[in-house]
Length: 196
Image (cartoon, rainbow, N blue to C red):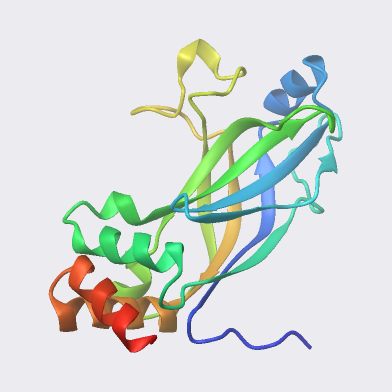
């Protein structure tokens, strides 16, 4: 059995991944033979899954999975980023991203598409996000985006992920700390003092 999620942890998991087979074919034509999933926690932490060989003509990639845990305990960079993000009126700054990469296993992975999940949603809905379908949009950096669609407004999804994000306890604790102290800076100072 896997150990239970701790009160200051976030778990990100991709259970299914699907991508337009034409995009996968373009990757193959560019010598990129494998797909790989990545997760970015506001630039403070992240993880890459195992590369999986592209199968010509397939849209479903059952082995393309990702599961990672991250600490949101007081004193971590991820917690500090989340405190600052939750303090802002712009909810998009608390978006975490799942990125689909293509790689030839020798060079750095090339970002093809990404999907976003807003961590504030866990607090407002008071539940973890389980089996959540997220559309994959082409990245601006993707050499395969058609006509420069680059994931901007009006970009078409090129696939989807079914993902789970578990962090309700940690996110509620961060939100409570922010409410109690009035600002991210005050919460960080108070948490640093409690850790001594």
